[in-house]
Length: 423
Image (cartoon, rainbow, N blue to C red; front, side, top):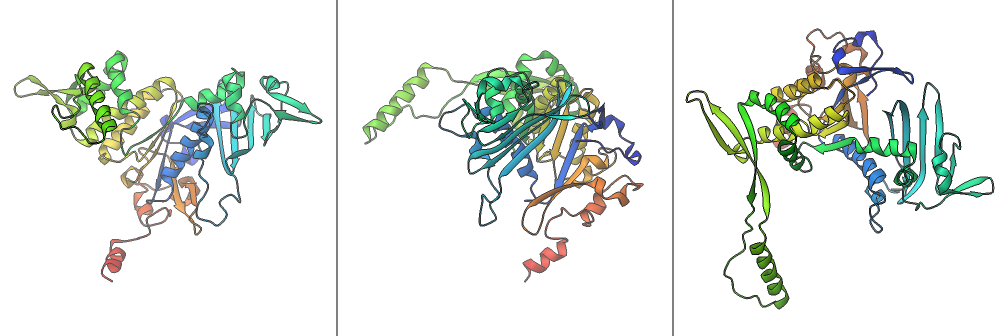
């Protein structure tokens, strides 16, 4: 997300945010990742979500280990010949932080945290197994959690599969809280379904008048005048009259469930949309369920977009273009640029090559994923293809589809697919 310093990229300046600190001139407000199916786009999103889960949920359960979500590369004989490693560099509270963790056979092999206040990076702590070195001046929050052992320090009160940063944050360590707060502001969702953000958006329509006003102004382009959230009784289809089951325990359980349902009204939220008929000048309401999948996805996506723009957070949307027409994708991206005046960032993965245009993205905002000969995913930027910066028509899709950037499906043409299908 660091913007190119090349003068040839001095267009779409609204897509960047000026930093001029820590050796960074500008950062990008958005990036998009293209690639063939199974090239690794979703795995990149999952990896970021996994790191967040490890940092924030490692203390939630005694038995379940969040670290087990880090799956090693599976296409080799020895799965654990190399540790699984994650690292992120981010800006927070006026400083730059670099946090990383290395996992080997379900345990933390290494963990580190560095920060940059002006231009020089300084180590805050570096962990190897259960031993740690730490900056006693800048990271004094670690003192109560280490024990001197000769010339080295041992970590205390931290299990070998739990991040040190997570433990220190639980006890309000000043810099550790900055790191975990940043992970709290990192949001990863899938565009394949609305799991995880549908209910969130419904709640905003119910309880946040500023969001509703913002969203309805956008939805007017879809002829939607209003959104109404109703709470209705959720009817569970259990038979009122039924024969007793041979299994007495199961029969008793069903009787208790039926009795509970009859005594307690279970509610669910139902969204209705209001549309205007211009010929009759009358308003009509009907369930959102009758609308297209693309309209439903757009409405539910507005919640996360609003929240990350307002709170200057990061949003990663895997399969962003799923269910969306090209023009709707462009509409959402333009909306994000127009609304984002702060430090929010949007990263999307997609397939729609019509989005490969200068009007939406600079070259440093366009990334590709591709599998190498060992089936490992590699990611690289369009900025590496220096010969294409002068394209006058402003579209890179033709070159991409012809294979000039790689990251395309195995079948280069419809004809080759036909040859295989026809023997």
